[in-house]
Each structure stands twice: as structure tokens, then as C-alpha cells.
Image (cartoon, rainbow, N blue to C red):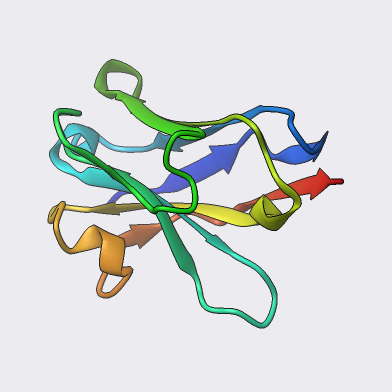
Length: 124
């Protein structure tokens, strides 16, 4: 069992930066690929980024490539999402997710664990 708790959301002006954190409970955190998703009301949850269990493989959605950076610290059971050059269209609730399968996680289907989400609001 893994519990995920996100933090770091907030309000920022366009062009600004935020860093989200997701802390996982349990001693098996390092076995899971970790991902970030986002969702706005009335729309489906959207994939943002994924990082493999060791951190050696990373994949981004085209919409955030070059602006967002995902990283992890397995010693701290934490995955991060550094968000730079934020745009109003990045406004959403951001969720972290954990799954053993790196290739499956970006689909958002049958993901083992989800966090509760943290709100990011970007004003123009």
C-alpha cells in the first residue's frame, strides 16, 4: 500500500514558477514509476510527465516539454514537478500517481495509486 500526498500548489502569475512535491508512504516507493497528471473541471484527466523507478527514464506531454521538469528522490520517497514559464492553460488540479509499469502509467488507466491533488492557478 502506498499513500501519496501532494503539496506546493498555489496561485502564480503567468511566466512564474512553482514546484510541486509528492511524498509517498511505505518502503516500496522506489519500486514504482511516478507520474503527474492534471485535470480541469469538465475535462478528462491529462497526462503531464512520468519518471521511471530509478529516475533513468522520463517522458513529458508535448504541452509541457521544455517548461516542466520531473525528478525524484527515492531516499526521501518524493517526486517533484518543477514548473517554469507557467501559462494560464496550466491551471488545473495536479495529481501524482504511482504504478509499477512505467509504460502504462501515462495512459492513466489501471494506475495503482493516486494522490488527492493540489490546485495550481495561473493568472494572466
